[in-house]
Image (cartoon, rainbow, N blue to C red; front, side):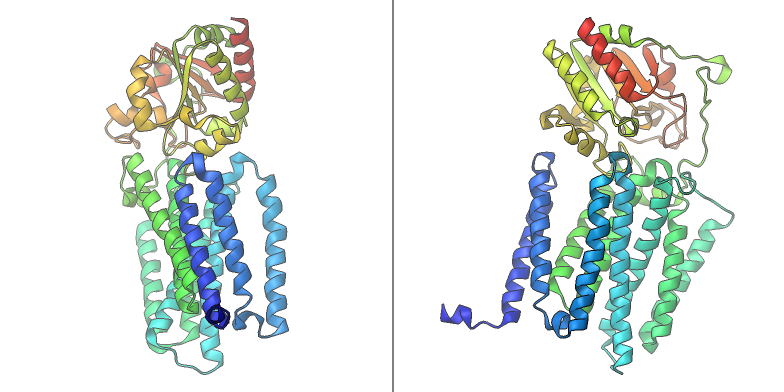
Length: 473
């Protein structure tokens, strides 16, 4: 007991950091399953609070009243912005909130690294080369993440064009800017000049922006995941700069999980990461924009009453949700419909595509908000074998993730992307606002299939009518 009490404060701080690190690992494990995601979030939040609290025992933070006041003021300002934003954000706006919060993290990491470089310069210290490299990596990666996330936010918030923005010689220009960033990086390392480092920061911001401009459409979820990984790496670099093991581990966890998620999502889209980043996917919109398509093709439409009867007397109904469900805020109504069908003995489950929505796990979070049982959510690989035995595939606001062009149209932008095979169900019902295409900007031939029926209108309003129709059937 005497030995424990006599340990220096720095040792106690390291011990608490270790507990926080363990908490982060447990939180990450919890987030791997919807069933334990809430507990994982709470564990992660508790670990973060513990880490921040013990950091105030560091002499570097509290050695002066000015430093302490600045730290507390920054925390108060951040809380004043973040808490209302997190509570008021709609599910449809969750992707852009994730993007901008992620960008803030990258920007903070970059500023910390710049601050350390300025500190070296102000005290006339010539730090070891490896410390300069660590700080510069934080500057470069954090700046790219900040600028890229800002552009992603602007696209998702529709403050700028959501489609890919392309211009002549785009890739050569990107390559020149990238080479310029590398040159300034090397000059800063060799000379130790803060001026070259600030130049690298400025050019990295440009690189982050032009890197994201040609990315759009269905690639946004992958982009968000990749930028999240960049922020994690920037935080880890800042941890090395500050000599803080907690930041190193936390940043590495975020960076590694982000890269793994990016790889998994690329695989789910049937495309390589370079193709996603550099192909300007979704630049061309080919939809007809009307009920009658090219060469006079038309689609079959129906009424909620008729579809309600079809659903009520089906044996198995598969619900395929998409971003349109989120836009309409219809997750609670779709659950009400599923519950109504289940009460009639209909086998109902949800088929979830890995890239449905505008961010990783968007549909899972949306349906969890409506208290949909976890065992009713089936990932694509689990759902597809059951599609041929389904009487009805009810597609709510999805388009690209059920588009057969991914299987049978070589040359299509989505060719090779694994899809949910709604086309294998006996009947297909689409809930759509209009004939406009999905994020990929291409028509869906399934809409013109003879077994497909469309219900046009707002998804929430249409689903409410279906609930009433099922009850009356």
